Amino acid sequence: MARAKIALIGAGMIGGTLAHIAAREELGDVILFDIAEGTPQGKALDIVEATAVFGSDVTLKGANDYADIAGADVCIVTAGVPRKPGMSRDDLIGINLKVMKAVGEGIKAHAPNAFVICITNPLDAMVWALQKFSGLPKEKVVGMAGVLDSARFAWFLAEKTGVSIKDINAWTLGGHGDDMVPMVRHSTIGGLPLPDAVKQGFMTQAELDAIVERTRKGGGEIVALLKTGSAFYAPAESAIAMARSYLKDQKRVLPIAAWLSGEYGVSDMYVGVPALIGANGVEKIIQFDTNDDEKAMFKTSVDSVKGLIKACQDIDGSLA
Ligand code: APR
Image (cartoon, rainbow, N blue to C red; front, top):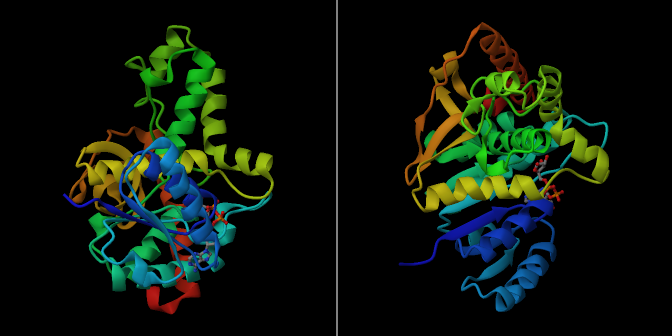
């Protein structure tokens, strides 16, 4: 069987990390695409030379021409600008919307059968715009945010409780902003829902509340530390988990920005929900039962995303 072809659109911090992980895992041959000349070629050459050390039979190539992504099975999009300290993800919308237009058109022309994973922020609005600009089927275009936010939530829980990260299953839903919805009742430590874990003394309610707040602001915490850009290791790992589930038909249930058609009371937009990813893309949306508090938080988050979509439509009339 031919190797999978993975096109990474954007060869910056996340793009380079994606290429490195994909090569180490022998997930497929990698095309690193960027508008910057030299960067994708340099990173591709650096990593392909490393395959001689870790022994992976894959090729890597840097590109500045969309023709090189032809026939890609997966496209992971990080093209655009990341935030700097003091910026919110929403501040990136003007620049990154234009980038999504160029990327969407490139994918439409050269890789229309790909499974597309968007990482560019503000995520829920950018994946929506990317689907519109590319015209690809909605079940084949998704956004990466929930895997990352849930990973942060899980690690904070592991750090606080001393329980192995392997036995923690954390979920965040909603948009990828500070009003995302960490799902306390649905997240578990060794199978125990978090409220029960509090009752059994793994942590206090105040500690759990602080972890929920830290999760919401997890991206900003890294931006403040790095000063020159945003997180890239955990975002890249998160997108690879999604790509792997598609390429290997693993049918993993992961929190992703998926197109909704009435699930969770939301239609015609992307927002973070648990979804099953297999060889057909998004094969099922999983619906958690939600109480009134969770519904209210979800609605606040969805309303923020709607505001961002409206802002996109105001900038680019073709999206209205
Ligand atoms: N087409 C292709 N690549 C582009 C374009 C474009 N139109 N515009 C910018 N790029 C490239 C830049 O040249 C750069 O190499 O996108 C890359 C972005 O890389 P970084 O600046 O290192 O950003 P990164 O940390 O990888 O984050 C990318 O993901 O998490 C989000 O908020 C983050 O939106 C940002 C994106």
